Image (cartoon, rainbow, N blue to C red; front, side, top):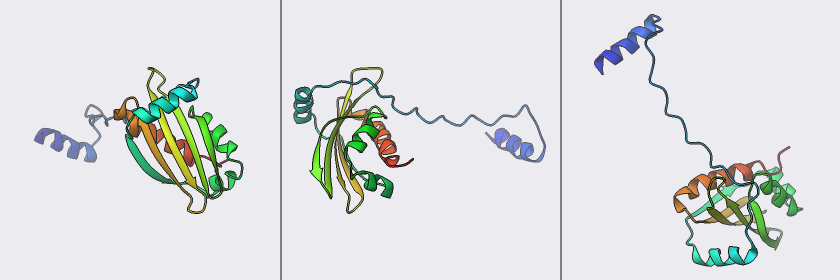
Length: 153
């Protein structure tokens, strides 16, 4: 280890192309979702009742996204473009509720999400239920990334 540190110090002063720093650990790939996911409403309801909440989070919604919510259908289309599908929605300003589902691309694993958006506070509260709870955080990251782009050109 001392030799490595010494080599690093020397390489910062002199150029030694043979001394290579250890490669950084690559970040895990984003969860890939199935663009053609399908789930009928009864199956969604049954799974929603059976599965425990694996993740509950709150996100800020950008001002453009809040403005775009005057037509709630626009959020549904936007999320669908990220392979997150809406199975039910309702509400009126300032509270909108959406139920979304998504499926992992490589295997039949579902993510069910309740998303309540308050247009007054510009906050979205989500609850995620998943067949594989260990991947809920990865799904929430995909969901948040999609939501953060809502209303953006």
